[in-house]
Amino acid sequence: MPGKDPWLVASYEIDMHEQLSRVSVSARLIQNAITESRVLHARQLCEIFIPAWDPKPDDICLGHLVPGWNDEHTARFKRLRDLVEDLKRKFGRSGRRNSPCWVFNKKMAHATLERTDDYDYKPALSMIDSALRPIIAEIESVAGRTFRRQLESVPGPVVTTAGTLRTESH
Figure 1 (tube, helix red, strand yellow):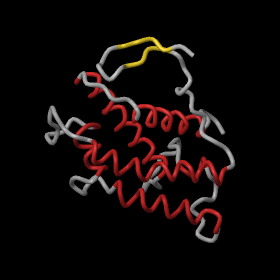
Figure 2 (cartoon, one colour):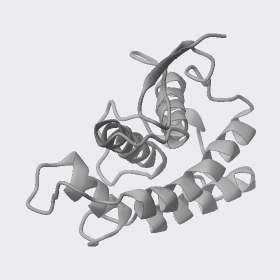
Figure 3 (spheres, rainbow, N blue to C red):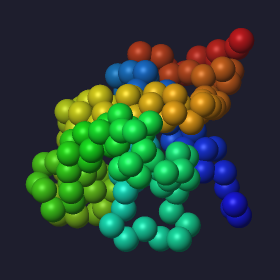
């Protein structure tokens, strides 16, 4: 396949989303940056896992990670299809006001009149997180490989809960 390995791209999105979910700081600037990054990575994962209506030729989709997953005659992928349907239902659509899809698009990803300088993304992120985790585990199970977590063991600066930076070494 030309270009990037879909597994590496999906691994990065999963890694960033999971690592940012664990960070909690009090400094508003840092917290906003972390929250916006979590929204971005959650949105990217939804775009990878939920079949697109009009995919572009270079869009990474679940079929790149698990070929044949959407074949209704393949019982092996039934749980994955059910989990994707759950994510699709929870994520919603851009036209469904206050759905996570609408919130991520209107409140963060696009400069719209719906944006404010203060918005609580926790309910939308929580809803999507609860659907993403089992999908990630199921993909790894049916594909027989794991997404490479690159950031968990990388030494470097860490933001503490007080909003200060400290150096972490392994």
